[in-house]
Length: 152
Image 1 (cartoon, rainbow, N blue to C red):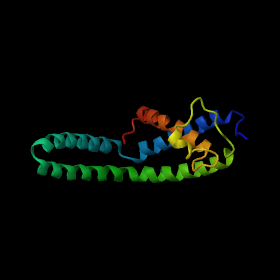
Image 2: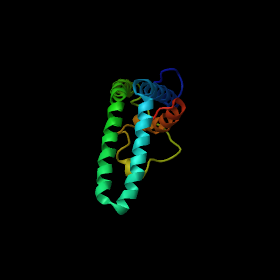
Image 3: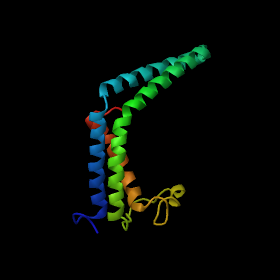
Image 4: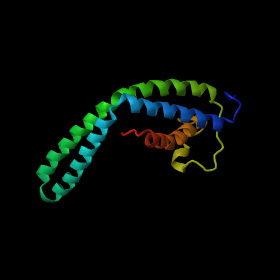
């Protein structure tokens, strides 16, 4: 059973594209991008400073590490609101998709890596339709983040 008469692989690509685009928009508009870029720049500067200090002054390097952790906490707080909204939207969408695509087993031009074969499968923890969604959504996420200028 498909939604619009296309193959399930194509429909999942389209659904994944729409969901990833929408969730990227959440991050674009619910998170202060300017502040996030400033924090990332500060963090990179501190990391460079820490690398230099580790060779000469390990005690001061530890102090810089604490500053980096503080910056990381600020970045994580900025991401909380869009992350919660995304969690709700994706959770609802995936639960709906599980009913629509539960019988879908994608025939892929590659085999799953052997260490994942026990995890992915009809009887595995991750169903084939969800594995396909994950494979498709990771590159789409990177593409949409670059296009929309979302900094994480």
